[in-house]
Amino acid sequence: MGLVLAIGLTLFTACGVDTPASSPSSPPPPGTTTVFTTLPRPSPTTSAPPSSAPQPPPSSQQPPKTGKVVVLDPGHNGGNSGKPGEINKQVPAGRGKTKPCNTTGTSTNSGYTEHAFTWDVSQRISQALVAKGIRVILTRQNDTGVGPCVNERAAIGNDAGADAVVSIHADGSNSAGAHGFHVAYSAPPLNAQQGEPSMRLATALRDGLRTGGFPTSTYLGANGLAPRADLGGLNLSTRPAALVECGNMRNAAEAAAMASEEGRQQYAAVIAKAIEDYLAAS
Image (cartoon, rainbow, N blue to C red; front, side, top):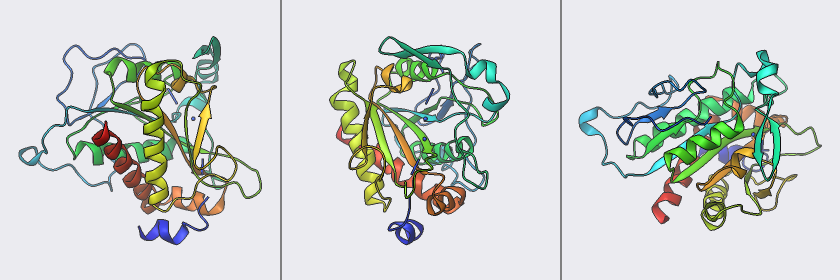
């Protein structure tokens, strides 16, 4: 908790979600990390954790499987900026609206990108959950591809029958003093899973981050929660879903935390614990 406690009084938050892929005909066993990609739908692959992330225990020491499925959605993608035609195409976004397939995301003032941050943190969260016997599915395969689109990302969670869908982002506000995390959820809800289950998931994530020493947003939402009607990945979800804006990448203190391995590990640890707590209570 050293890093977060050190920045907890000054730490400051941040950004966005999205590939439908059908569940594979022979799904991998629980307790593995599966990655879905854009069409055509390849067989899912096991994601490699960050080189510095803790490795899973040997197969002979694998924990009991919980039967729970979590879809992690690392925001944006590293190849988006090179394919404007693809990511700017209009796709369904729920509530009768459309929006661009995806965006490039934001970055720190020194150039550390949101897509790199979300990819790294999501892999760390995945490792922590898999070590507890939870099956994890990632919505993208790497940090060099394009998309998937917001509607496709939502479809992955729906097709998997996920017990929880958590999208990882970071914000890029230039407002003076803007800092802190917030957790978005679809509101008003469009189905039963967007109601009480998604609210409990969002609240668990908020409580976990706050307990971990991260401050709530000073510029979006209230008490770390932000009801949203404009996020396609949340609007189109039929599973409990929430989106975490981990901090503001344009704030110096939060940018430093996100760009550091220690900071990313701390974000991942508290988010993974919050997901575990939500699943245990479900």
